[in-house]
Length: 108
Image 1 (cartoon, helix red, strand yellow):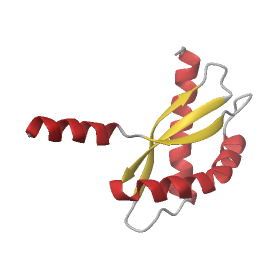
Image 2 (image 1 turned 180 degrees about the vertical axis):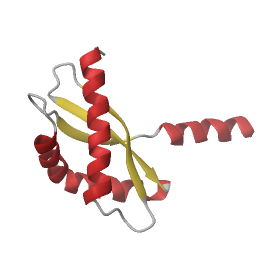
Image 3 (image 1 turned 30 degrees about the horizontal axis):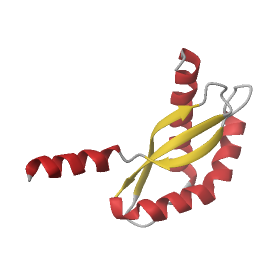
């Protein structure tokens, strides 16, 4: 990744988290945040990886955030001063789940 894509990734992560905190109402007893954003080299697309607590709310939270994504995209277009704001795609950050599986396997 280039310095530019790293800068755009970090900027998007910060701004999306701000929008989620300000405008989004997550399901009851659920915490949703963006842990990482990856941006394509042409800066046209980005993938925001969601961290969801508790794990059992992952599916529901992903559906809800996808419905809310038009609002997030509009807010990014208003607040970011970059030539073309990347289109945001959504995925789950499953690193914690993988680490837990490995830890459980090692403990057995």
